[in-house]
Image (cartoon, rainbow, N blue to C red; front, side, top):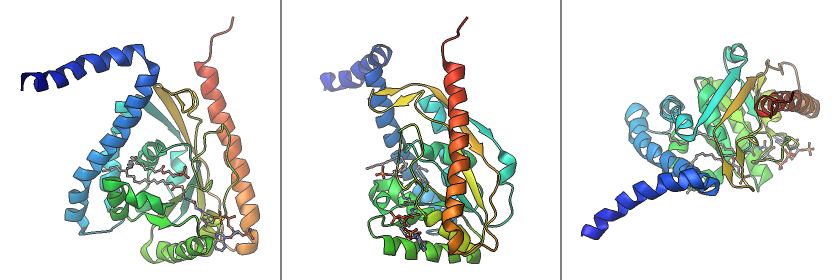
Length: 273
Ligand SMILES: CCCCCCCC/C=C\CCCCCCCC(=O)SCCNC(=O)CCNC(=O)[C@H](O)C(C)(C)COP(=O)(O)OP(=O)(O)OC[C@H]1O[C@@H](n2cnc3c(N)ncnc32)[C@H](O)[C@@H]1OP(=O)(O)O
Ligand SMILES: CCCCCCCCCCCCCC(=O)OC[C@@H](O)COP(=O)(O)O
C-alpha cells in the first residue's frame, strides 16, 4: 500500500524534471495531454449538451466552443486574429480553412461563429467521447473513400444550410498537411457554396512549423495567426464556375498563408546587426 502511494509522488517529481531536460518528452507529454484532456472535456460536455438540447443540435457548438477555449493556455499557444469584421455576415455561409493538425480545433473554436458546425471524416465518430460530442454538435460526417456518398451528403448539407440557417466549416485540402504549403483543394466546399448560393469566407492559419514539428518531435509554445479574409460571393454561379472559384480561393489563401507565416518566422528569428 505504502509503495502504491509513492507512484504519484514520484511522477510529480519526475515529470517536471523530464519537462525541463527533454524536448522529446515535452512533445509526447503535450500531445498525450491534449488528447486526454479533450476526451475528459467531451465526457463533461456530453451530458451538458443532452440536457440543453436533448440530442444532436447545432446549438451544442456553443457549449463545445466555450469548453475548448482555455485549452490553448494549457499548451502554451496564443492566437492573433485579424479580419473579425469579415465574419460579421448575416445568414449562412461556408468557411474554408487550411488544415495542419488536430490542433486546428483550438483555432476553430477561437473564432467559430454561432450556428456553425464542420464537415469531418467519418472516422472521427469512433474517437470515443470526442466522437460522440462531435455528433451532438451536428458535425456532418463524410466518407472520403466513397466520393459519390460524400457528394450526396454534401448536397443534403447545402439544403440543410438554407432550411436551418446554418454555417459550415470545411477543410478543402481534405486531409491534414504540414508540408509548409497548402495542398490542392478538393471541390466539395465550392459545390456546397454554389449549390446553396451562399458566400465563402476563407480563414488562414499561419504555419505551425515555428513551434510544432512532428518529425523533429518538438512542441514548443507559440503564436498562431488566424487571418479571416473577405467573403467571396457565389450568387449566380453554377457548377461550371466551381473550378475557377476553387482556384481563386486557393490563390488568395496561399498568398495569405505565406504572408502571415513568413512574418512569424521573421519576428521570431535571430536579430541581425
Ligand atoms: C467539450 C468539448 C470537448 C472537445 C472535443 C473536440 C470537439 C471538436 C469539435 C469540432 C471540431 C471538429 C473538427 C473536425 C476537423 C476534421 C477535419 C477533417 O476531417 S478533414 C477531412 C474531411 N473533410 C474533407 O474531406 C473536405 C471535404 N471534401 C470534399 O469536399 C471532397 O471534394 C469530396 C470528399 C466531396 C470528394 O473528394 P475527391 O477526393 O473525390 O475529390 P474532388 O476532386 O473534390 O471530387 C471529384 C469530382 O467530384 C466533383 N464533386 C465534388 N463534390 C461535388 C458535389 N458536392 N457535387 C457535385 N460534384 C462534386 C468534383 O468537381 C470532381 O469532379 P471533376 O474532377 O472536377 O470533374
Ligand atoms: C481515440 C482517439 C481520440 C482522439 C481525441 C482527439 C482530441 C482532439 C479532437 C480534435 C479532433 C480533430 C480531428 C482532426 O483533426 O482529424 C484529422 C482529420 O481532419 C484529417 O485526418 P487525416 O490526416 O486525413 O487522417
